[in-house]
Length: 424
Ligand SMILES: CC(C)(COP(=O)(O)OP(=O)(O)OC[C@H]1O[C@@H](n2cnc3c(N)ncnc32)[C@H](O)[C@@H]1OP(=O)(O)O)[C@@H](O)C(=O)NCCC(=O)NCCS
Image (cartoon, rainbow, N blue to C red; front, top):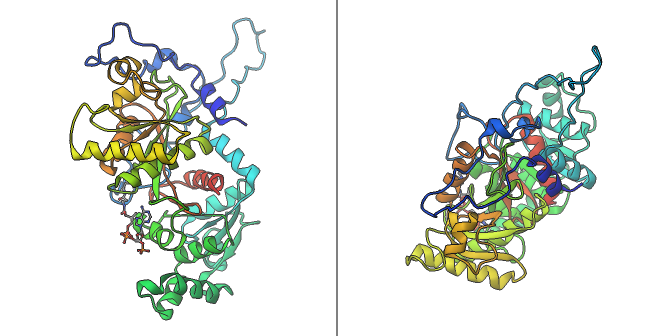
């Protein structure tokens, strides 16, 4: 199954990325085509964007797979004009969504993923759904009797339930934690106590290879979810910092600047600031994620408020240096910078500001210089541009670990499990 092909199909109404006639850089054409004229396929459920703010949005701790909006009510199938009276209405072909494709690819891999929060009913439902749909094998952490009593209607057949405090593995995991953290001042007693914590226990399972990936954060903060990963799993070889990316799926009507029907943004959720080396690693990791998770051939733009030296500032220098390091570390990548957003995305602006660049005007991977710009940027695309945001998804860990939004639904957790399985 080819994700890129599917995305192109989803975006079949995308207007060709033509130049708006006589477009001047200062007077941009609207980013999206009018919705009503172009929507034909029933893909609203795949690209819908929440219009209202989630009820309990906690900006400092939000992350992971954004809560998906409830699918719009499907319109009844239309009868072709020449159909005989009384003939059954023709069902529109069901369009495969990006999440469907990711789930199917995950199912082929049959990975084992630990869900750390057995006390949360959404996690329990997601565990059952993952096993039922064959997306991944699941280890759910918590007390089996309690979980079953609290979720009498959920069929947990095939879900392995492990209680950290009574696990026969606890001693071994605690000893490993002590070894990993004693240089940081952790005592054996502290290690034993911390290893009983479900997120630490899950991270230790992941460290030793008892599971292939970890998903948590439905009822824990981002910091509490990621800290065990940062301390125990650490970064992949050659990666200086864990970072995060978002899949940004174009609206059903398409977007003239989004040739592939999808963009990848980073870092919108994890590192507040970046050194040049960290930003370079983030760009390289995001290109890899774009290829492996989204099926895109990455064209990476290192974003700034300057294009190719048009402005001089320490912040610009950091992006220029990151671009240099990324090109040196990954010369095979199609990557360029520093580029302003319009120079990265709009061919006419690129022709004026960065005519030599292979990326300018056609970028599909956008690397923001810091978390403020990245987080603001993805929300603008989501709220004003109608893009669906999937993520933030972590990258750069030595083994895959993902944090959920506390406002997530069971289906978002299933999606996070599928993405984690693809990263394993
Ligand atoms: C990711 C985050 C939670 C880490 O916070 P923290 O636990 O306070 O991290 P610390 O600085 O205490 O570091 C803990 C360990 O993780 C490591 N670490 C921290 N960030 C890291 C990164 N990005 N990559 C790799 N390691 C990292 C530290 O080096 C440290 O390791 P050590 O204990 O072995 O020396 C923090 O950066 C954060 O809150 N980010 C913003 C997230 C957010 O608010 N997002 C909102 C938008 S969705």
